[in-house]
Image (cartoon, rainbow, N blue to C red):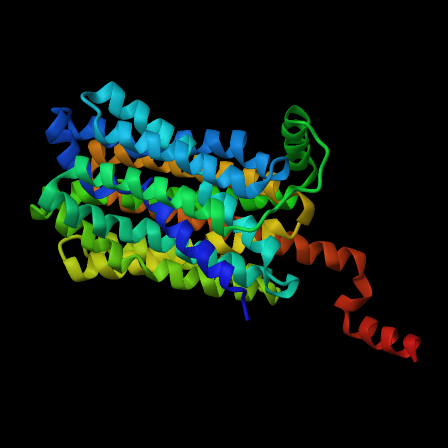
Length: 407
């Protein structure tokens, strides 16, 4: 049974992750409030993700250098300040700058996942990471529901002011609830950053996981960064209705918890192939059923289940590569993950503006297909390598000879 603290980390991950995604169903409302175009406001999530990628590179390695409980609390307090500036932004430059700073300071969920792997028993590390990731995904998706309902009543600025105070309270709570966790390293910060680059160079599997993560989040954000504008233009739906789509996306959180269990059992490739297939199927349904709300919901369920499977499987597998360097491992993986998301958001916004929703769906299909093709190629090369090392095992007569020799 997992320690109770793991469930606390999952809840904290949900609350802190939600802050970065409130804006997605609110883009039309924010654009109207500040008198900017929909095409301009569609770049707001991309700025947050670019900031997040910078925070991943600059701040996550600190988990291998500083006491982790204090680090979590300080970054949460800084995020609270960024949320307050976002809530009170008088114009587009301030709004975009605050969104960027929210991204940089929004890395706490990624500090909590390796924390879970440290706390959990070794044979349950994948399950613990999967549970915390489930909490993070729940926060990401429920944030849309909360944002839509709150904005429909008291406005988007009040939502962000509330989020700022909740985050500040969470910082104090985590400071006193988390156990002391001091890293086992004597490296300085500059050496730590250099060693992070060395890890990226020396671990091809880590680079592979980062690529998979980037493709996964690009697919995820291709839908979630454009769907509110599509619903507004095609169905006339406002933020409250757009927020309800977050409920459909909760399939991703359930998939994430299962992915961690399957990776613990050595089934990474099967999970990865299933994830790519679900992403492709989800976008195909989104393309075919773009005039049907039920069809759109079905597509979201499949897409988010695939994204949850892929993210949890790749992050869990990455943590096993160098257990004493989980902070730096996570930095590399999540940098790839969020750079992919930022690229997906920017591309999806451009594609939607130029060619519409159908083109967005086919772009998502291509991202899912890339995950499938890369993993199938990896499996083929691995099988070819085993065949080259043990040629006798690939011929019936050779198999007989092996058994005869061993007797």
